[in-house]
Image (tube, rainbow, N blue to C red; front, side):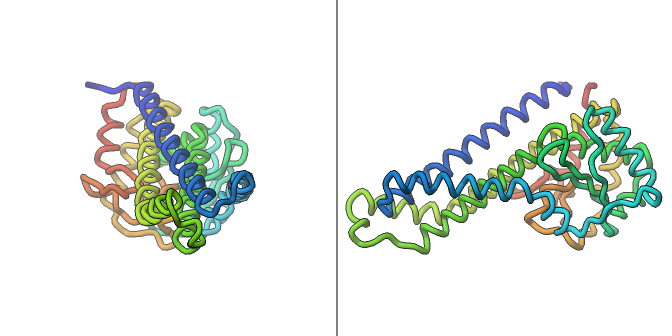
Length: 295
């Protein structure tokens, strides 16, 4: 059965919000345990809320700068990279968003990424390896994929997921390393402490699973949305076919930024079946979906 673009978009949006609700419930439960373990009362809930707000604001406004610096992205010279600038401008116009800032990463591994909290504060980065590997039509498909991430506010969702994931791990460490007084370890507080220790063990695994699941769903959605923007699913499919056989890892990529890229920078999505912690679905599956997509 052939899947329409709108079916894919609807299904992926629903799955993403389910994941975000799970994140929120887990974060709230950990906060409840901490406040009750240390008997902080109403003041504890207020302090916890203020801490989350400031943590979110700092990460929200500076995450794009951190991401760009971490992969060594430099502003793309409009003359030297004229074709790239033209393609980004064309696709952004077709998508109905402002032209993002354009960056180039000096790396032979073909890849691309998008970052930014909104279409008005967005950036696209492309490696030199990608520019050498694909033709203009395929570059349009790659850029359309990244533009879709921006237009769909995927980067905002991924930033929120990263923020909440970081908070959960931070609070886990607080429970693990700061024991409440013995008076507070009796009765129900003792049970809460045991639950806190259990969360300290399983929360990093759960955070990684949820965050990577969100990332994989976003990739499918961006593939479909990008195909709609340029009205050509084969453009990105052809580009991904070329990337499928390229195994060299990116130099400056890290686990923290892997989800930003169009393909996994460590080559982990080249296998026909990826693991639970994979940030991207298998390339073969993405290509198959694009080939069968109805626009």
